[in-house]
Length: 421
Image 1 (cartoon, rainbow, N blue to C red):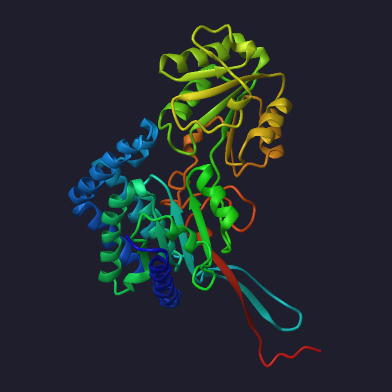
Image 2: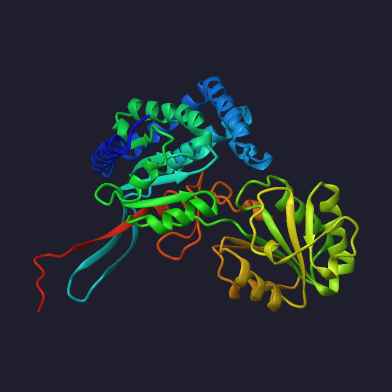
């Protein structure tokens, strides 16, 4: 066990190595980054037995810690999920390299030609909980965008992350890129997190990916800029003009497909005119699936529902539980979302385009959906190959953060002996 001074020294060494690697990555060719990611993808599949063995240790650790079934599901890796991880690495590899791409360009009457060009951010610190596949996603996206990355996974996924990290380093080595371009913090000690948050000389941005406690800690204590990934308090508003079959399919998928992900639905808002029809049908179907439904007084007559209290609004359950409330209008639904939501993902079910347009234009969540499952709130499903998180803030990156969102830009100004009058 390292003491605080030793952890500080260790983290400073990691930071210095990342800074040096970032300098080299900034001008690494697209071909070498592509080769590194393809090699890492192959290594993940070739080493799947070792990854699953490491994950078994983490699952046991998680059970001993008393993690919920949904959290254990987030932690678990099997061959299908490792295949998905490999596919994600390959998808990122095949994307266009964002570094050096021209965002826009124009000429000035002075004779200057000006280009705004994408450039890496530098060194990114990623702090995440539970899901060890974030190790692969974050490592791949940072590399694609020409950034070095320092990964600090959750204590429960420590062994899985180490096994995945070995594969990423193999990819870097095979492509002739610095092995310190993707580093994993080698300790479970929380002092390493505190150190990362103040490493302004070495880290350019911190991305926290986890629960409210983690994100709140990072936002309170970080001296490094933060891309906030807040909890997913996801609402689905069922309008009076909703299609009953579409609504049933979408709500069941949004709640029950995987309850432990940030795109899982956590609150239903049901228009009063369809409480006795679509509302009853949806709630009964959820109950049949084993979902606990915490409903307001107007829905309490449905057999099996539990009475809702104030604490159920604005809550991220991450489990087989959902809140349900009756509203009189789309305006009331939007007011509820503004009060209790987290600006992550919200959805409207309606066949009335004018109502949908109102909902989509008046709300300001990072992701707004119309007649689609909120479980699509994912960078891979958006065609980004993977994501480093869903940014819920309004500065720089918003929504799924892929490789392009992990770049900044610079201006390249060209003249011909041009001078200013």
